[in-house]
Length: 189
Image 1: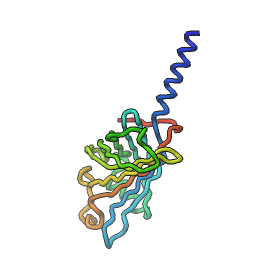
Image 2 (image 1 turned 180 degrees about the vertical axis):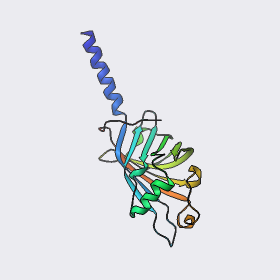
Image 3 (image 1 turned 135 degrees about the vertical axis):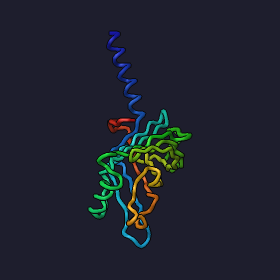
Image 4 (image 1 turned 90 degrees about the vertical axis):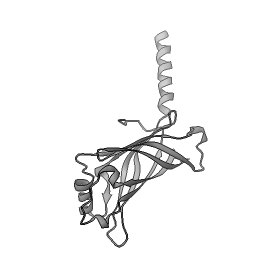
């Protein structure tokens, strides 16, 4: 009887803890490094993993580089093989803490938060601070954030013959709705 009661209590405690994590594998990152008068340098990745753990205010976003889709196949090939070298550096990861975050304060009205963390990309790591708009939706919690990325911060080499055709700052936008009913399978580094 004691073992059964203990098992039920442990299962209940685990269920409560598991509900505190919000997750999705279908977040979106839009990427643009276009400059006026040249070919548009734009891509989208709709297979982004996002984890939000309200208890610790932890926010993690994992992006598989080769999942970015460009309008032109050749541009996608150069992006993966020459610039971001996705065979050597297959993922970009941002892990941070949402400042002054409390799940009780999240409503249908969008609120701005600051996220302090570390962005790891192309074998380099950089401390960054980004703003995020967070609100409750019918499907879960929506998170929208802009990540301006300076290519020199991550040692991304752009050949001089095309350097004027690509912006040195890649504007990236993260959009995701995280839910509690998704299983959490994220490897944190």
